Amino acid sequence: MEYLKKRDMYIAMISSAVYLAMAVLCVIGLWLHGLENMPSIYVLNVGIEIFAMLTGYMLFVSCIIDVQKSGSDLKWFIYMVNVTIWWAFTDAGAWLLDGVAGLRVLNCLDNTVLFICTSLSAYFFWKYLAGMVVMNRPFERVLDKLLKYIVIAAVVIRLVNIFTGMYFTVDADGVYQRGSLYLLSMISPVLTLLAVASVAIAERKQMQKYQKVATVLYIAAPFAATVLTALVYGLSVSSSVIMLVLLLMYCVLNVTQGREKALADRDLAVASGIQKNILPKIFPFLPEREEFDLYATMTPAKEVGGDFYDFFMIDDDHIAIVIADVSGKGMPAALFMMVARTLIKNQTQGASFSRDPKVILAEVNNQLCEGNEMELFVTAWLGIITLSTGHLDYANAGHEYPAISTEGRDFFIMREKNSPPLATMEGLRFRGGDMELKKGDVIYVYTDGVTEATNAEDELFGMDRMLDALNIDINAELEQIDTNVRSAIDDFVADAPQFDDITMLTFRYNGKE
Image (cartoon, one colour):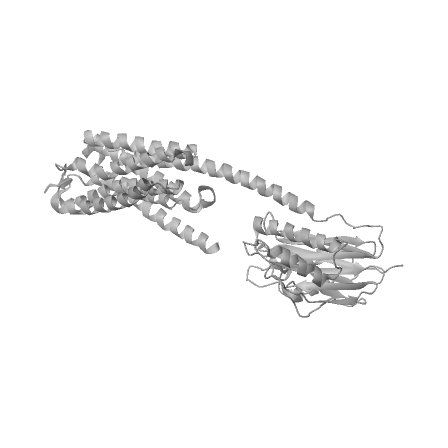
């Protein structure tokens, strides 16, 4: 994403320099001519085209840097904006170069590009329409191929016009004159607009209201301007009218996309609230139970996260603690997280199910594999503690190694052979182990968002810094231990953005009096 942002900003900066330079050239052209030496209609036309160019420039830059609102699939809309900017520039140039004998060749090339732009603009709108609807009708597929050949032929004929003068000529005095077949140059854009109208009518049920309005405007306004230009020599408003239509389209699209984004943000906020509420967060948990203390936190990198923790009593003498991390980010990971959490809890609490964490994870793995079309997976650590004895049974499905503090000594990483994550393949068996907890022993489980927190220099927080933070005060309250680690992460990361969910769970065994 960072690469795309830098690339888009680079494109916006280059286009700004080019398009502003084009507008400045037109202003310089007016100054060199002298307003008093040009017909009023010429000055009016050039002024209108400069306004159209600046409007197009702002539209183009907005589409590039505000893709979140305007959408990432507006390629053909952006093409329309660009070609209309060149249309306005060459139209302004045509008026500025008219009658300048020494720039006859430049005048001819300028008008050739102008004629090409008229056909390309209409064709790009056709392609933009094709992105709005699904065109499966036979005549639509035929039209798509036919219009492609028509626009290619139109470009070729306009280039040939340089030598034949069928559409226009520029005489030895540099004066532009329409050719005998000038009206034939309108065939390509007119046929394209008629094709747009026919498909818009046929597929109107697929189109939203703003798309219908935009289509009608794009057909009617330029068509009227084209007819007026063809009949009244000296008036040129086609490109500026089209630019105004594109501006209106963008404004409506921006508002519509903004409304859709606002609705999506609202749904995302609701999902975030649901996710936060399903995770237990009332501490101390079962304050009447003196055999243990625990504390847990989860900070998502986005509105919703893929990490989760859980803890619950299985019966009066057994407590389960879980920490897990779903691959991916955002809503898909959050939904998969809720499914995984529910399955683990159901398998662990069910009276008919095994109390062996290895067996529990094996059953959950098989269930998660069913219908996992998105190919997400979950790393998980599950521990079941017998409160009367301190016996801990645990299993690890590709998750981070826990940190343990025993007999009042510093935390250390409990390394052992790991197993694959959940939902990677059916029929997996999971490794685990057991240990005897003594009074005061502490288990700290976490997700990779802790160790892989990254600062501005792309350095990882790592296990060593995590252990140093844990060992600041191993006898502190569990909330303070959590705070010590989180503060160490914040100091290390500083202003760098958070890329992964940060989740921690700390459990202390107090023994049974």
